[in-house]
Structure formats: C-alpha cells, structure tokens
Image (cartoon, rainbow, N blue to C red; front, side, top):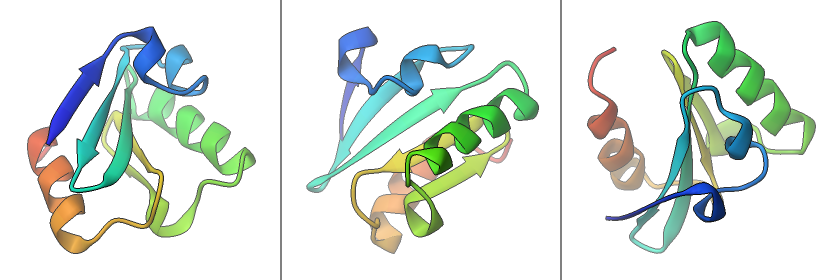
Length: 88
C-alpha cells in the first residue's frame, strides 16, 4: 500500500473533510479516506460521494471515516484499508 497526503492527493469532496483526507493506492485500486470530527461529519461526506454516483461496494463509512474506492475493492484490498482504521 502506498499512501499520499496533501490537498492535491485527494478529490474535491475529500478536500472538504473536517479532519483531512488521504489517498491509498492498494494493489492497483485507489481509495480516498476522508475523516470528520464525528460520524455525522462522515455521513455528510458519504452523502456528497453518493450525490456524485459513488455508492454500493465502492463507498463505506466506518465511524468518523469514509472510504471511497475508484473500483469495487476485493476483500483483501478492503481489509488492508479498513484494518488501518482499527475497531473505532
């Protein structure tokens, strides 16, 4: 997994995340992780992604984090990224 940080590394939705965002390149798939102060903030971010057509297996909220994938992730790709978030 390769991780990129900074405003230019993420999409315009993630750029507005309350607690920042990062991009993780995982075995040929890209995930954008956006962080809110609260799970409600993350819900707002997830709703913004849904409004632009990212949904289903390509979008997941876990606590105050939102993961948006460029392609439907494999179980291994999903596990790699979600494992970094812990149980919270």
